[in-house]
Figure 1 (cartoon, rainbow, N blue to C red):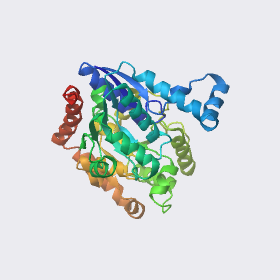
Figure 2: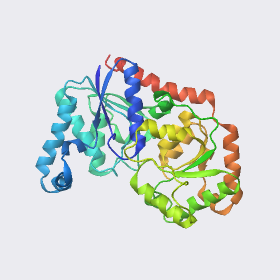
Figure 3: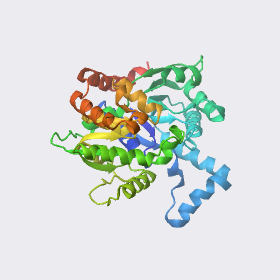
Figure 4: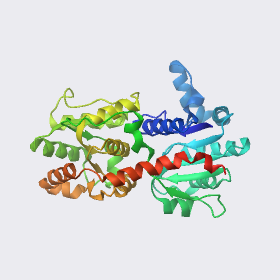
Length: 375
């Protein structure tokens, strides 16, 4: 079966590349032929050189009709000859991402015209994604008669209540994020001799709104570094490849009076998913800020604690029965022993092996049942 895998593969966040790679790997294992389609449709505006970059910025604002035509042509061409359109996952039910809901709507309309079924795999939801015009786009898409399967990694009740109509052919069911398979997909195992503690950094712009300006994100990272160093850990900062996250790393280093050399591991937006997972495998423990750092670490069975700046992170740790591993920022600020005690506890406990296997099986069984969706 020829399957168009729609994802944010072209963005700078490595997490989306990893889940896309993993979905494609699983589909190939099951005998299908996947091809990746960029949900952002940025390939509809591929120009070379400086003039091209300027044109891509100008076109959406001043030549709207041409923009619509280019995007529709891009999707139509990408879907021609395909048996299924599969959304790879990630937080696509998200009104904060520019044009995402509108492009999902466009894809749905094109699929309806071309007679191609649609499936959603382990999708995530951000904020109140059911409000306003963008929410209507999503409701139309998820309720389309062309949709044959919807699985989600979180907030099932809200998706079913607010984004899927009563007349829709199917409701959403819960599965794990596909990236739980990344270690197997890339054939990478955790280095049991690893001694580095990785501190995964996200931009202060992302953290500040969640904590309503009540904390200084830079100072929190500084405190974590100092606490971990005081109990003997060798710490390195790293990001998921998003450029603005690296700017926050530089601010942290400035406050700590540290040089970049020897204190930072360098993922970039051009890094392959396999290289990022390999980087994680060299760590003994991770303080995570981004969801797919936590999920990839889980796949590698590396212990983690995490900033719970987004509901999706709390949902993930609850699903793996480790809600206490989401950092309580107020306790972190006021009790020096909180983090060191939590780290020791987490490193000793590891993960529930039976639950780990169940999470892997849930998404594997879902993707393995594609042929049944057509019955």
